[in-house]
Length: 331
Image 1 (tube, rainbow, N blue to C red):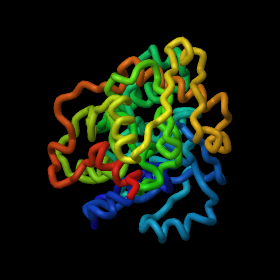
Image 2: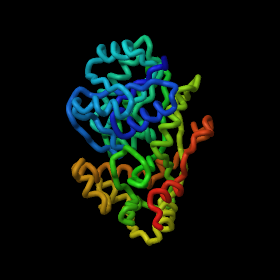
Image 3: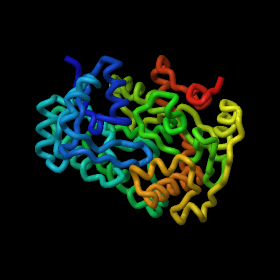
Image 4: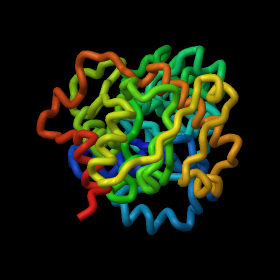
């Protein structure tokens, strides 16, 4: 009997990627925790799906190869009982924190109260936000609230810091479960809107590679409070140069100033109107502007020593040029 890992939000996007990696690694049994509500999906620049019709869960469960269990995140006592009944030793959360932290805060309380749950990875999956980001984008506080809660708990935890996900620059040519999303560089339309300047490094990682390392990290005897998983740091100028080389065409490049970004607006890329079907334009512009400020002021120029892939050299972590070539190379 393999140890059990619960993945809240595991029906799609990042969560599904992690579930499949755990199944492939074969040392733990993943179960998926899902909201009891019907379909609701919102896009938070990572693209987590909150839920889907429960009648579809049986077919999806069979397709993924993991059980899907409906839960009420407002009921801490019921969550605790579920974690104990299912003998869940580890929780890996991929919940959407854009609209609120309450479900995750309840989950942390339940995991702490559970007699069998010992480890927890919170739904951060990016970088840690400072107060300066919260000031311009208040929903960022939901993530800091989650970090505060898990660090104050008695759980062994690790906050995964992969930088920004490469998936949005390599879709659809490279496998991903993330929702299509254009930010900074729109490779499909050979267009870029660079925030502030193009020479500031940005840490990048593909979710599929990170998920493999998440699965491997479950076997580590001790977790660090922060786990860095960075494929590469490059600048937007370098990324555009790679894109032009791979696609054999010049990109149309514009710049958004810091003052423009502070007004919660960005230059519209050709791919943005498609996203408006899932998220209102003003909200999308605000999210993009917030990330633009972070990109342009060096928040994603992460400084770190040890990276998790150093512990598992057998896991290939693909670099930017390799992924962009696979995604966009023309014959």
